[in-house]
Image (cartoon, rainbow, N blue to C red; front, side, top):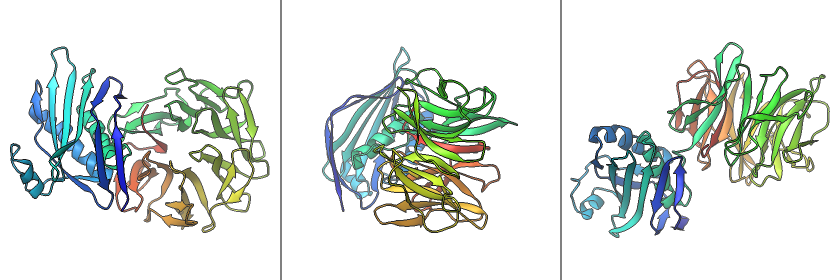
Length: 426
């Protein structure tokens, strides 16, 4: 099995007001099975131990279980003061210690360290400081992500977020954001109209379609944390607009522009030049563009050969080729973060299911199946999961699934949801 070896020397800001200070570690781990981690009871100073258990320990366990690579030991736990050998014999490969301290001025600090129980050597040591005294679950999210990063070389996604559209009243849809675990719901727009098709750049800037001024316009942020402003059209009316999506470098927006005849084409907007270029040109519908991670190709949906199918092309519109070949209705492509796969939906007997096309194999694999419909797939940043919407409990809600389709989890009970996008953070 492959091994992952990595060395970390950085001090990084992991969330607004939350800092992580870390020491150098070198780890080696295989990906053949989940690593088993045990945790002693958190030590606390200035905090209630019961609150820490409820708001931190339980969340950390769930985050690690959902990571797919680390599992927390739950049975036959030795006493907190037991020697490392006892934890090893109980089945733990890593032993985690945490200490929470509430400073007089309100800052909350967590020290976390882990030992390899076989070698009895430290493999992880980091201090987190929250100057805002936010929920303890955020400490759990960032610690889980960092532990996954130590093991695999890639940070976990417990601290990631999902941006989506939700209907708030008749004729009104707004953009919302929710944490990876379904908590922390936040409304991002308040236009009192239709706001649709959210896209988030690598640095956290939003783009979306809104009808707040009448005809549809693409609004978003030109600068990180900047104001929401109109991005396209710069003047006049742009016709029917939909599906904006950022290029990986954040300098361009692919989107869809329609005409009065019902045709639509893929366009690319150069933000600095405020100039849009048409990539497709023909009768029919071309829609739902999705960039590959290199920014030199796009997947999109087109009915140019009859029913909707997924096609690929270069970012200048050349080298057009069809990707999907099975099924009469395939749509909503989403290119994976490493570029090796494209997720999409396929309709069968009146419902949609999620599929993944593995480009290296030239094969498609079905992910969901059942009596409900599953739509709008989007990848997790680590490519281990998909977020999607489904009506399996009535109203359209957010769900996540692993790539086997065996671990489908309802993310939130919020109804009227559509068009999720999974991001590292904003």
